[in-house]
View 1: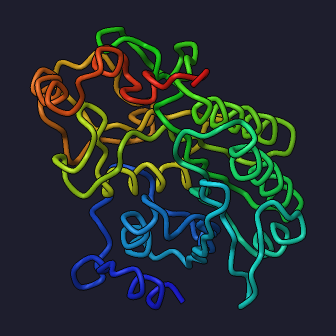
View 2 (view 1 turned 120 degrees about the vertical axis):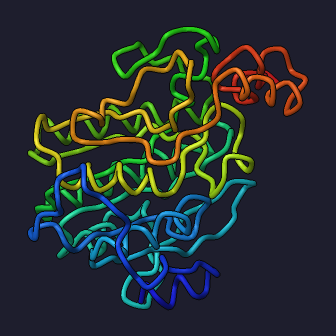
Length: 296
């Protein structure tokens, strides 16, 4: 199933099918093998899937998408039939028999609260409920660095800093983080939130100052599937920019080391000057999301 999906998406597997080098994080536990990946054909999924496949996981990718009301609506293929994450029954079918879930599916751009609620809040709540009932051991939630987007470019930030969302989209992801914590602390799942920057194959393709390579994202997912420690963790997921005020990700506590560092922070800021002419976007971590007019 996965090979067919990768072929349809035009994604190549890692050369020779060999797993990426993952010596620092803990090896995968044999008890965590069957992994559901939602949003597999979105912006991040096609970049991440080949690396997860290289880890030897038994992946169930879900990838069907339809547009509605100007936003992305995730519809999931379950056993050859269309299902919807807004449906509790569909989520129950997806979660059944899985050891872990990597939840990428979402509306990933700015939209109204109404347009975001179904896919970013209701769908996540349904999936967490289904995961808890099915005894899924681990859950990985793709959040966003936009939950910290109203911080200035030169302000020191780490995972303990108070969230400052830059948009309706970021606020919906922050609600998702709260749902994840609720289910982690009340239902016994190991839940890891990844606040992801801009995942792209190369630095040049990403928004300045927030790039993350697919290899490093896969390393973070591996850590989420194997880590010890508390039921709930939040990791910032951005490449290392020398001189940046963003603290190293908490994932270093579990063996993470950025394998594809970015350019120096000063160089990224110079590129930012050519990327946008908005003063707010240049000054705030959330870039154009931070300059969005909520009243417009």
